[in-house]
Image (cartoon, rainbow, N blue to C red; front, side, top):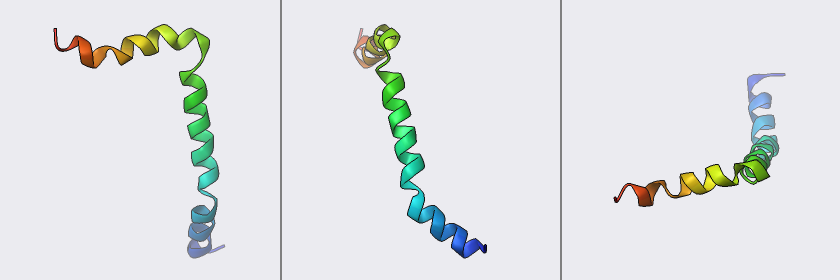
Length: 50
């Protein structure tokens, strides 16, 4: 398997690992125990104005 075929395979199938990472990010963001942390992080831009 040459470098060119490896590169072609990566280009064709790179959507799968990207999708898996996206799903993991979404799942870890919406875990029930993370709500308070996410709300606190969402308020950071507004707290800087004080």
